[in-house]
Image 1: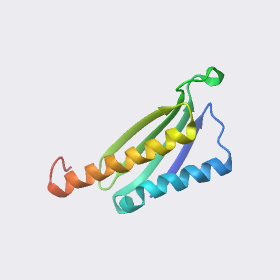
Image 2: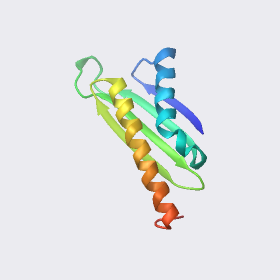
Image 3: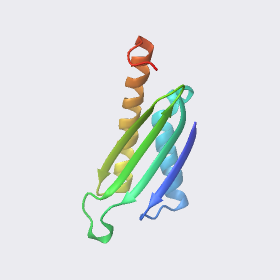
Length: 106
């Protein structure tokens, strides 16, 4: 599973990048055989004005085909990533379950 992290208008140091990688891997590790790529986009929408402006978007490319998208906003980047990772795990679990039952395969 390839993991890419992109940042826009938000500073992500190496320690935060590693924490994000660990959080995403922990959430999606059990689905690794079914995932080819995970792309995480981090943005600060309002800059110094604050508010619910830390945005975490996760795109998951499934094997053999299909893509899933999750978006989460919070006033804290760590919280946005954690919630998005949990939601991603649930979305992948449902997609894998549907495919096993033959619903929406393809």
